[in-house]
Length: 337
Image (cartoon, rainbow, N blue to C red; front, side, top):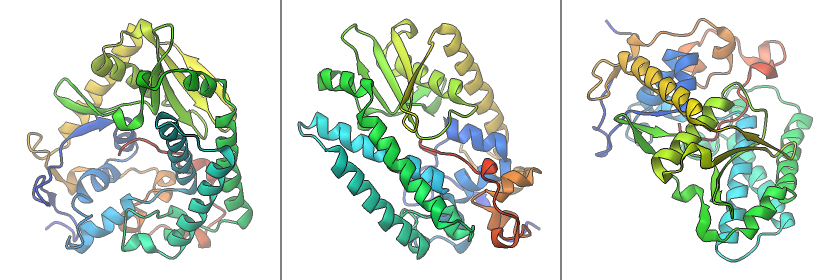
């Protein structure tokens, strides 16, 4: 008999929506780290947005939406930068001071809502991992998060790249709202940049805003953007510049783009998709069974996993353990999951 909470996840039975199989860097990362977390995130939580969902599904959906304070800060910066660019496109300017003031106010409101557990009833509201799992965080550490957001926004306004963007006619911009997915060998792929524009020299500038470190996946991530440029914008790799902008440091790094990088990305996606689909009970209908997805044995990953309450309830609470190991916590996450 299957343990309580284990069940088949049937796509397409909730509100006429279909749980369509797709690929993204985030999905690939989760799959590589822990198969059980992958199941919870993409199958077990499916349909949990519905208030009438069964309690197990609803719980998984609420937990899925959690983010660490670092992820939260990254999202806030990305949203603020997007507001600036949309305002510029629409012909008006958001001042640096007003942008920072509005973002800090948003931070306060979201922090209070998370502390009060609003996200448990309204999962799309901000819910912080640190509040859900009572991670002991000093006031100075919360202040450091606020200061980092402010620093990123100030650095954004001082970027030479921003001056170049302002000089570029907006009909040559590629904004987030214009960016979608693309089909790769029959699989829907999400691998789009944060922003892009065509330079005066006729080169496609693809921009990725960073609020923390680059991590181990930057080459794959930026290579995915190059594949997006080829598949969606018909831009050959020799016409593409991949720009990694570290807003915390105010530093721009240009990465190479050529056919060899594209082929490495293609092969990575092929192998990743093949591995993911091999775990499915019915690959054609994207149906999954929980017991087919094993748990990781790396308890460091479990410690910072959103689903630890349902998957590893035996783990000691943060307050009863040593101070949290920050190096084990996820840094930031910005793409669709």
